[in-house]
Length: 247
Image (cartoon, rainbow, N blue to C red; front, side, top):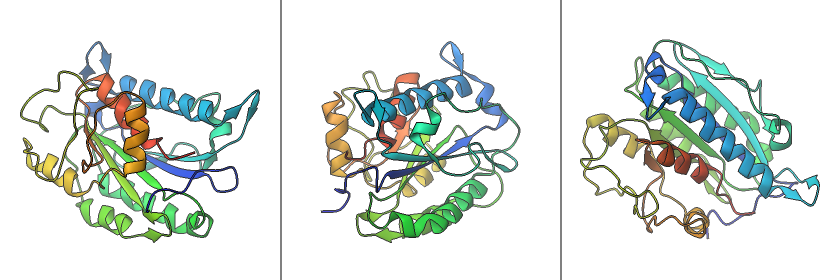
């Protein structure tokens, strides 16, 4: 069955984060700015990865992380791929810039996966987790996202997840993230861009869903890796989803 390989020290999971830092990310989300909520949720997820990789007082790094911020250009926040152990003291602060060149970020992710490909064959399929709060400027990112989803390893194709901070994704608000069943190919969405992100999102593997179910979430079989980041709880769920590789 696909997406069943465990992340180990010898074959860690690779997660690539693509983070929109356009000017609109300075807008509020609850009582914080969007970029602050994203940074906090990402730091919490990294802490969870560290906890999952720790036995006693020793860290057995089962995750490798790359992180690209993008606006007018793409910025390699970590200067390459880093072991989760190297992030125990946090990561550089995210700051907002100007436009939303989403395609450039996906191109950077594709280039990185091709560079890392030989290291990935024995481990879990890599995951690209993209967070944005608005429509792209410049080239259409969907063809590059589909290129990524066509990159096949023994564990399965590379996974693409999208977290969309917007009220223009679902017609109705989600009252309880823990009881929410997820977004499906047939789910009615509120905007063309939400539908495009749905087309760019992979199905949630059952092994990932099982891990999230154990954490109390109610995502149902067949849902997609598309999250409406309308509050900090849903942003946190999106990042927790990215870290749900089997260990």
